[in-house]
Image 1 (spheres, rainbow, N blue to C red):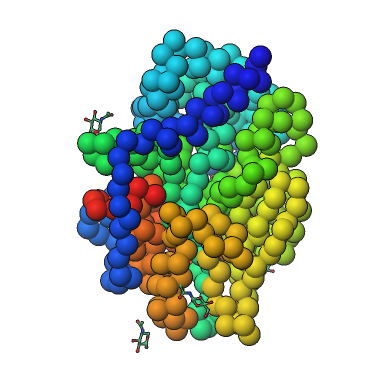
Image 2: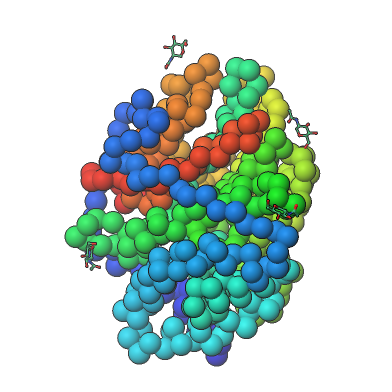
Length: 395
Ligand SMILES: *[C@@H]1O[C@H](CO)[C@@H](O)[C@H](O)[C@H]1NC(C)=O
Ligand SMILES: *[C@@H]1O[C@H](CO)[C@@H](O)[C@H](O)[C@H]1NC(C)=O
Ligand SMILES: *[C@@H]1O[C@H](CO)[C@@H](O)[C@H](O)[C@H]1NC(C)=O
Ligand SMILES: *[C@@H]1O[C@H](CO)[C@@H](O)[C@H](O)[C@H]1NC(C)=O
Ligand SMILES: *[C@@H]1O[C@H](CO)[C@@H](O)[C@H](O)[C@H]1NC(C)=O
């Protein structure tokens, strides 16, 4: 009974895709240039910085951030509940989430169970809703990530995070409601131990996992969703039903950023740990040719695709499709992104030219919430909030 309700709850979010009311033709454009430093209508400000102190208890460490973002987090969760109630007007779905998802916090590995309780307390939101909210990020991220090496061997790692597909289309504003509500939750985090940075990340306040992060001087890491038949829904269903030998993807990336000290160590952990859902891990190191895309099934690494200067491959770029296969024709962000990377050439790669690539439609689209640029050798991470005014692809 519980299982069927939960399946139903997940299907509901997939189903929203079928009711997107409006057809919007594809919008593509010539490779952009001169977009950096960011300005104009596609730029909505820089993400603010917060410190997360790993020396204080997991239950306390998110308190400051969540207190500051309480109103925005509540409004997002209310938005998701409104969507749910539009499908199940009895309010039963939300009731079930509150009742059954909350206790699952106790099954999460340390420190995530305590952290999630601390987040729910600080936000004044039922624990089950925060648990569900954390599940979402593992399942609805469509993105573009790239690791590139310049002529001097310096590595850059950048990404667009596109999120909110199928989560409510507003036909008046031509925007995804959830994507709009997420933008004010984007924060840069500086995770510290003994008052020193261990790693930095970009998060939506309320989510404990990591989709984008840097361990200064050592490596950079991003995660992209990988859609697959044996996909996240099955793994998460198994986890809900008590088979818990797989790891949440966003928790693995966080553990790697917290504990691994080199590119090789990070690569091995990302390739070998059993997961709840398939994923792409995009990893950059700190010296020449250290950049790869790890294509994961739940059980194992299927492929590791690395920068290889000998083969003329000075960058690796990943959207949401296996690199050896064609992307879905309705959603080809890879070809335009690679076209613009190729035009830029290795001689001219920089924060500025990578930002140009990530600002070119449809690499930039209606789902894009932020663009992050990372430079491992300088330990630098910059996050820009994005918008894509019409005409613009909905994904
Ligand atoms: C669409 O967005 C506009 C502006 O934010 C808002 O006033 C309107 O209520 C939204 N429509 C729906 C159906 O949510
Ligand atoms: C961190 O810095 C603060 C203020 O500068 C100081 O009070 C505290 O003792 C330091 N903590 C550690 C673990 O060094
Ligand atoms: C690169 O990372 C390795 C492993 O963490 C470290 O020993 C080395 O000093 C780093 N090199 C640079 C140039 O930062
Ligand atoms: C970009 O260059 C690479 C390497 O030369 C090539 O394999 C790829 O097809 C090019 N892609 C596009 C879209 O131009
Ligand atoms: C790349 O840089 C070189 C030298 O700085 C310049 O001549 C060339 O026009 C640049 N190419 C592009 C595509 O910007």
